[in-house]
Length: 514
Ligand SMILES: Cc1cc2nc3c(=O)[nH]c(=O)nc-3n(C[C@H](O)[C@H](O)[C@H](O)COP(=O)(O)OP(=O)(O)OC[C@H]3O[C@@H](n4cnc5c(N)ncnc54)[C@H](O)[C@@H]3O)c2cc1C
Image 1 (tube, helix red, strand yellow):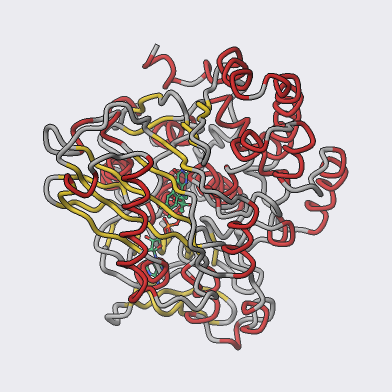
Image 2 (cartoon, helix red, strand yellow; image 1 turned 30 degrees about the vertical axis):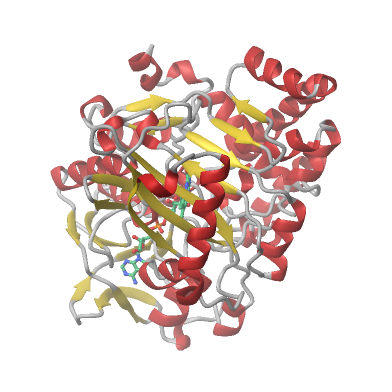
């Protein structure tokens, strides 16, 4: 049996391991961190369970099909709880908008804020659906490794006005500035600036409307644990605290990998879920690289980073939604500070995660567990986070106390935070980027890192830096692209689940929660 090494255990690494097992490989996962999950790992403190990163689970069929691929029933592994509203957006003037999935309710909520935008939203949603039908249904799990694959997509991109930004396209249909924010902020979930990112990413809006928004019972970490259980059951070997620092390449082919503690793992195939900039530049001698020279790698533009504070309170806030977006006084100006000027602004917009509103088991009884996230410049902004961290966190807490969580400071129990330094050092992400390279038009599809290395035989990439990009659905789709490129060793292998189901009712998950 051929040996495959997967470097990294983010969702892309875990999904790749499943797909490689299904293709007949003997799979070993090497994870640098103490726990699996990468951005989706878990912090446990004082009786609280904090998901470190992803909390909004969409397109559940992408998860289900991985368990089904190896002959397992997802019901025996995890439970997905539908979230309603998907997000509550609270604007700086105090008004609010509940973003929900049902057509009649979303129209009602739009009417309450801006009656003249109801028709515009209908047309916007239709446009988002058209983009989804091409950008997601046709292309999300297709390899973009040739110029011709890119050229084939261009006529649709022009027809769908993908030369406009998400904010630009939303503004064509919607007049109310608050609703423009509400329908354009989603690219931030994949590391893009809504005012510059191509409107292809408007597909996220339709993806959520189509399949819904879910939370994993027990937190996203419970899903990572389910993958671990599945992989061990199916024979994968998993090593944590195993940071790879060299890929052994001989005559243009991968032969093995070496960890920082000098263990050698021979293999036929390497699938890297680690940052490709770091992998090419730091793990592979330059003599083996023609396409990915150090100079070319230095030209990559990286997504923004995040400041995230995790905290618990000995007080309940029952009026809160599970997901709240708190808009600050500025939108375009703040985005410009974060993405272009790389300057830490005095104001912020925040995402507040309150998982105990859905699952009280994540905190001690009578307590609430939270994280608050603020998009901040990546490490191209020369911010000294060791000096800023405490000041920035206190500023956020005070703002939260005033706007959303009365009595917060008196009821705070545990709290800690991560900064761009965490992404750079712990997750080994270039420039401390939270979402890999920026999803700009010139770094998307064919222009993103290819899933199959052009320089080295047997080397593959998955995850946020590859097509189709960041976000849990994106990185799970990158493993589907991988599946199409890695040689098949299993004569019984079938490409199951390679197409998105037409509508949600075709998936098992809905039946479970009906
Ligand atoms: C705070 C936050 C909130 C988010 N919220 C959402 C959300 O709600 N919904 C959503 O869909 N997306 C969300 N995202 C985005 C999403 O989490 C990521 O895009 C996705 O999880 C990335 O998965 P990945 O597999 O590409 O990489 P990662 O999860 O980063 O995994 C990469 C792994 O590789 C390991 N690694 C790196 N270098 C080495 C090495 N040399 N040797 C061994 N291992 C190595 C790392 O330790 C890590 O475990 C969020 C991201 C963040 C940071």
